[in-house]
Image (cartoon, rainbow, N blue to C red; front, top):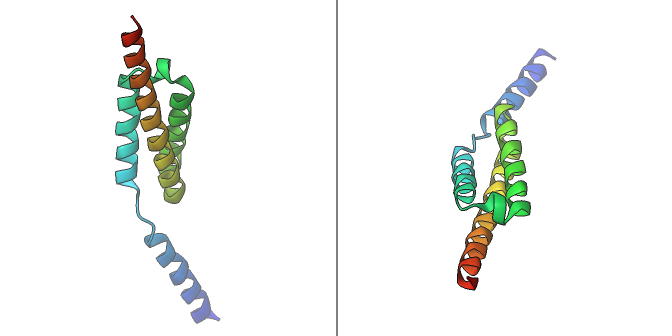
Length: 100
């Protein structure tokens, strides 16, 4: 009885050690989000920027609570929407510049 309880605890502890912190994903998400903000995506691509911001905040919250799998998932989604927002903002600014 005691050996099986110890082995179960050891197994559960080992599972927790295999989860890695998504430091790279968090850094890339932050960089993409800041680049989108600097490109004016909050004005020119508001919907995409809002999605990116929402996922970025969720990623930070999950990371703080040590839900690293969720943090990684949210960081990747934030990066995706940040890049789309940045592209859209730059494109709209260029088209507005050509229209004048």
